[in-house]
Image (tube, rainbow, N blue to C red; front, side, top):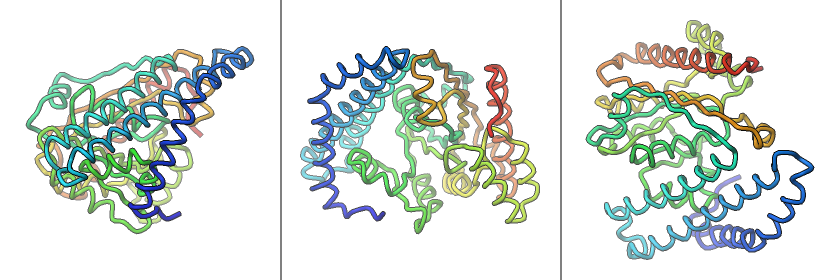
Length: 340
């Protein structure tokens, strides 16, 4: 489905979404009462927890959307939108939204988040003066929100991401994605690598370019398709590596290599995580139980990144194999069955 023009999104879609969220909040007392009455039949207060999370997301989303409208007016109806003050204000809105949703979800879903990172990695992310390219595993519901939260609130980094064109249908993502240095791409006709290179070449001292080399959330099916893609292209060695990896899909090197070429002096941070639910069904099943999400950050200095294209592809696969081994250790410790 094509995305409507900007004027239609602003004048029709955004007010409609805001009214729906406002209506949801108006009837929230009834929703909470119904959820409380239903909760004993589902165990763990699942309906109650879920309804409160949904209402919190709606409230934060509505507040952030209205804040973006206020900033548009304050910027002279968009004329000063690219000024430093406006950029900082929009990142503050994003931080408020992401932080609020994160805190509610973690508290009500009873999630413990455990970080593992070296001192050098923490200093790199928390310091200023050095832009960063962050490569993350792509698996689980809510992980993108978590990555953005990690950069914005824990390290005061301004994340830059490539967004699918369909996210313009969300008024908040449409505004923040357009006003901050992100890119919207339609994979059916856009050039994602060109957009990533453009963002990488413009990275500021406190920016972090976020890339998910796997392209989409891990599943046995995406893993299988990744292996087939490599085999059909004649990349036998990389296909063999991909078959050995059980918990990650084969990385697509294009975006990562485009970022490294456009910003050769950037250090790289690799983010691994384990414990995110794999779908809405698992979210429902896990909701009443204590959960643990483990996060590991590795630091790769720019000097350690190879210069040749083939060597860079091998380097990326080597990191993904290491990432797969780390996730496998976590899964075995929890007694989980291999995927698929």
